[in-house]
Length: 82
View 1: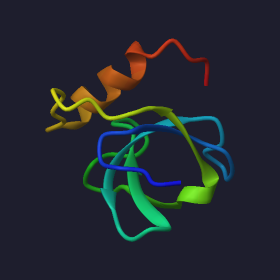
View 2: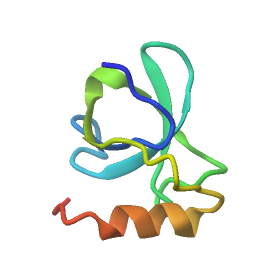
View 3: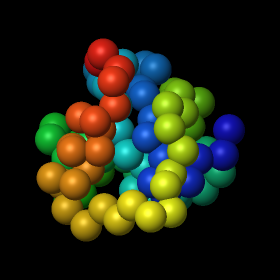
View 4: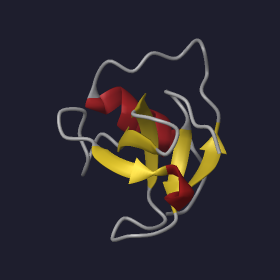
């Protein structure tokens, strides 16, 4: 699976299973950095294997994410129970 910056993903494994995150960087074809603006902030993102992530919503070209609040707000707008 190819994820890109701005995609909303759900963790499928680990202590953060079923939580939603925003992809903030791609490291290579297998790993990305994710943050949710609350437990994982932009200054300390989590490195995650893409095999352990499920794509929930693709990136919107009009959206910009400059701080933790904007990330948390976008995730909160999704109607998905974590």
